[in-house]
Length: 436
Ligand SMILES: Cc1cc2nc3c(=O)[nH]c(=O)nc-3n(C[C@H](O)[C@H](O)[C@H](O)COP(=O)(O)OP(=O)(O)OC[C@H]3O[C@@H](n4cnc5c(N)ncnc54)[C@H](O)[C@@H]3O)c2cc1C
Image 1 (cartoon, rainbow, N blue to C red):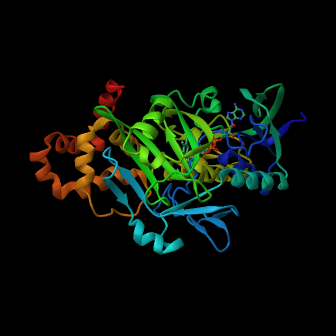
Image 2: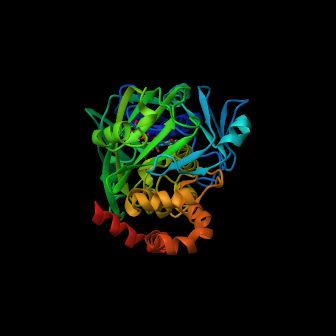
Image 3: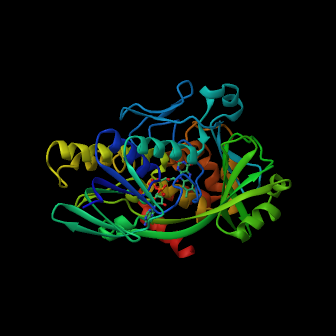
């Protein structure tokens, strides 16, 4: 068959583009099927923080080498070229609904004076990164089919048959790198044993002229709305003067920008681009390989595997396929090294529910008064981390000395914080779901 490949990759995001570059480089006959006509054009919201430079993450201790302009993954032993803009940020701030009190991860004032060595991490240009990966994939011999919508897959005696728009392909292995709402995962039955939590749509816009305190920081805002709050995310863009704001819908955006204590930041703000995204939240897959299909990136995880984690998946999946060919084991046993790596680097690295805890913590558990009290009580900057799996525990730890007083002055807050423990996860989740 004309369109027969050693490995066929579905999706040319960070996971797929990295898989294609790697598979081509190590001599596999490789093709990519991508729905977009220009795979490097970003059409889905992404804050594009290098996630993360401040801690171990996905079993890695990745960082950017400013001198060589390379993303370095020392644990796994690879580098990725990136030569575009990189804008440092020096703190992660959580704002209370009073518009002033905040919990700071990292000492912004001190860190910004240190320049590169004081940054929590940096924002870069995802489009340029993808462009470079796809360029390398083509250079390494991969065929990139764009504007094709993958819609069917079936097992054959020697691999898989795939249909995308009006074209048919065959391959010994398929790497499903088609993102968080992965059709590969659905069609191949990977989702059958996963817990489905929620599907939500959100918006984001790129703005100029936002007058935010300490602009070289990332910010999470608890925006007041009557007796509740809603979350707004603000992060710098890759070039100075730009920010990205992420919110649920236009009515929340209107409250945030015009009627909240944060409206003062938005007086001279100009929107330059609006985007959106859909998040399908499942628990992680139990194993990422099945019937010669290897899932990579967001397709495997409970939410975002991040750009860095997704690239690692693509890289490792391609190597596992090469190993299967080398060993003449063109089956799931042949690519088991990918599953073992993934299990250690994702579910083994962190209990995914700790990430959910932060969402529940900021979303609807605490009242505006409770958040104000909590944030006012934590004055000194906390550990300079960008690790979302640690946030709730770090906040609780910092608040511990004030707990006794809070039990008298605001007992509801003290009770809720005590309850915010991973062992109560199911109960908290039910509470939040009941609230809507
Ligand atoms: C609001 C928001 C903010 C984020 N911020 C950050 C951040 O700051 N830092 C960070 O590292 N990550 C961030 N992420 C996460 C990051 O965007 C993803 O984790 C990453 O892009 C996942 O890479 P992927 O290759 O697995 O999937 P994707 O990037 O989703 O790529 C999947 C590709 O598959 C293609 N595709 C899908 N279906 C088909 C089909 N049927 N046929 C053909 N092609 C198909 C898509 O067009 C796409 O090109 C953020 C995400 C969101 C939503």
